[in-house]
Length: 137
Image (cartoon, rainbow, N blue to C red; front, side, top):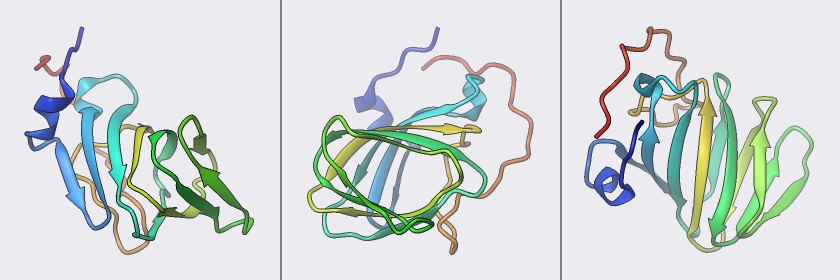
């Protein structure tokens, strides 16, 4: 069993900050769960261009509001508490938070923990094998 506290993750190297967002990564590749699990804040007034070419992602908005634009279809969707979106086709998209947006996210395959978006808006593919089961914190 793995048990972790968000407040502890926020104080550790599992809390990754980048331009326009911050992500507390509670489960990572080395946890051997088959997915990673994050609590992420996207900051108001930022325009986040993302294109996860190597990962699928599902996001549930807990707090805040904004929009997500699907660049493939040109359709823009409203984001608000209770809205889930899944990038099931490696969808290129732009998130535009009107207020800070707090959300939970899962990635498949799981991320290693240090990823930040590259120039294309993607996380790089990780081809290393996972370690033996990591100990719970």
